[in-house]
Length: 217
Length: 347
Image (cartoon, rainbow over the protein chains, first blue to last red):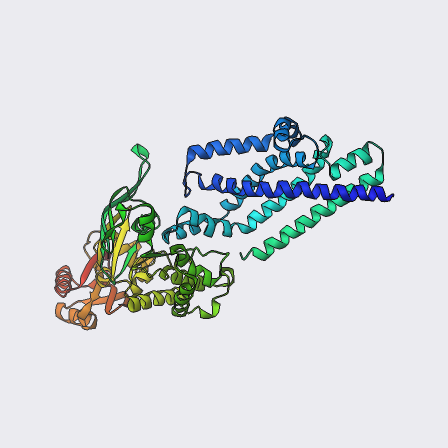
């Protein structure tokens, strides 16, 4: 294999990591609070707002139900407005982020739901405010579940970012399709797949390690 | 210290409404250990959770240390809750925090400075016998140790009142005793007022000064513990006591018991002795003075704190006139007499 090809593969790998990192960080920054909101506004919860909860739930479900490939195309005008282009890694990061936010939110909501209600009650009996309950009880107690959720999100983003290659997003998926599939180069195809597998394995192991380190259950 | 004034709790409304707690008055004086006993679903949990407003009462007023909690909400209620500690059946410790950090939690919530937190937590760990466990996580502790952490945590904000929601129900008998001793110790050392709910007579017997009996959301009986264990006022109170003392007539006898006296039958009685009666040789005097025979079927003596309680199931054998005289004799000697029925004697 030529050194030019190796350079392309390295560049594509970095592009993939870049897309996953940008969309992952932004999605976590917005998805975690959204997940907390979805949980604490449930009926009977510490900030029960049944109506807002329904509306938030529906919006989240819509985000979760649109197939990524359609979402990617559908929001091209928005993407162009935001990053000035509809192709390239920055452009691909926009739909990736949009898709990941509700995904993260639902996983966080699920992790919070695993916190025994008795702990919230105990905190209330100590005179904790709702914000204190969130920061001192709910989030720390759900930390393992939230890390698991974020790991799933990163893995999903890696595979979605490969799909972004289909619309010229750059990265390993793009490389695989253009060189491997369109030009019948099975070696390139294989290498991109192997790198993706290694990335997924690596992030999963990192996630599992972090969960093990923080979980004292 | 704790006063409930016509406090009730109703879930839902209209025909489907559930009256978990009917209007209830309760007063627990400073320094007392007050128990509320009842079967599950009787409204015990609702009652205790109304005290710190984990459940907001539908009607009535709650006073703790002279302050009306039902008039408060938001920040003022949270401040008032610092003066009311609570422990739970399932401990409710944070699994992500060490023993030290769990006990420190209420102080963090109050905004106490780090250095002062340390100064206040360490003595509590000592008091509850947890100094060597300070850096362990709850998952590494036994049930009894977890409840000790919960007690230390409940005391951290220096409350005036401690609420115990079935605090020993998940523990084995031996651990229960050690936790009850700790609660008693705290009550004496710190003058802490304790309100506890339980379904175990053992708990009431061991540490409570007064007890309330709750049934179907209603406090049906309130008494000093000594009185409750000797002369419960209600049917339910007697059922609790008999189940606790395991003093029921043998089944073979129950099968032969008839409600009305027959031609040649003898009464079977349950006698409850208390106070001086326990140490008086009443039965032999009874036999002598009334000229009857007494067949003792079951007997038991229990110490309830500083009192002694004797219980006996006996058959009085004699003519109807003699047994009638015997019953009158027993009743005149400050004994609680209950005629369980009559058994036919084979001539």
